[in-house]
Length: 392
Length: 94
Figure 1: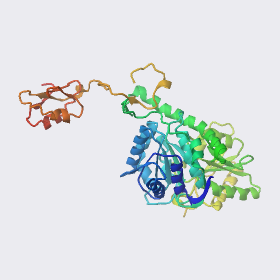
Figure 2 (figure 1 turned 30 degrees about the vertical axis):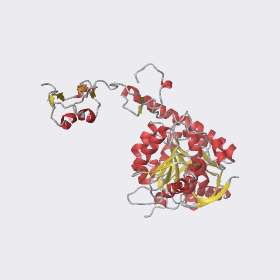
Figure 3 (figure 1 turned 90 degrees about the vertical axis):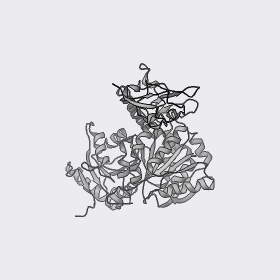
Figure 4 (figure 1 turned 135 degrees about the horizontal axis):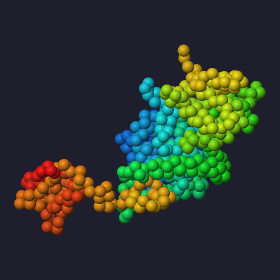
């Protein structure tokens, strides 16, 4: 019987690593991630999980250990946050370039300075171009489901790339919510034994990641791009297959809420989507045709889905829990980029909200939607980027 | 990556190198200083063979050592380690 439990998203991430039969976990503690690897340490210590738990001296070493283990042919897992992820940056490129299907939970936390332990996406979005697939979760159940799906995806021979499963610190990481934990044999049926594109073999020695001259380098980059495109095709398929197997889907590439006849779509990521749904419901009651889109997969960016979603709307407003200093939120930039070559493209306005853990409530989102509706009716965006609830 | 005609589809996912002699070419050309062994002083202790970071010193059955100048980069570690000062470093052009 599948088990219903009430637990934090961090503990649920630990349960998912156990259910995926991860064989090596290398991790370094950092708030708000720590309880992920604490939970796993408990599982390993009690014998519930048959894995090697490597305590390392830094996040850079954690990724190096995961890479080495993955290259020997075992499933690996790690988790980090914020500055820990930043310290890992160099190794992230090595992991994707080496095409190792590592799955990592990133418990989103704002970057310092000033020091913050509260959530925003500036940590994981700063790693946008490292060649890692990036999922963003909206609730505790999705954290479990996405980690299982991520292994299935990353170990697909058309992909062989690592993935981050991102969840916002505290809003999800330390918040108890009901989660359905499927039976182990059901997970085993869905997730076959670990597969890697290449493995180290003592009988056939070789080294990897060696110097490649200019006449060969570009093709290896192109192959990563191809793998990302393949991932974009596979993610909705895997989600559907997961749904058939376990009775629930996680949202594919973009979760859509009341978008069919919408004039305005509020496009966001992570937990803000839940509050956005409440705002949409309220506005719908008032007769406003507003819908919500949640970008669940940020890399590969679901360009085609965004184009489809925006086809018949007059305006898309993005809500970024992140700022690319000197420009705007990534979601705003990339939505505009996705729509630019469309004939009747909608207006796009960008909102910056919730940095450093500031609460983004349904009321906050309703306010953004009201402003957007005004711009939509005027047929003009007055402010490309607006910071929400900014103190004067 | 020597088989240039191979289609990209047949490439490995990431460059994998099997051990070969001098896959980067003859790195001995990088050398500025050349180690020279004075076999009269050599006691066949094989320390130079142990310390050579490039495996450019070979050890014969009788424990005598030989420097492979095709791959010796002239780092001088062997000369530094030699307990009888049997290895001297000489500028290449001399």
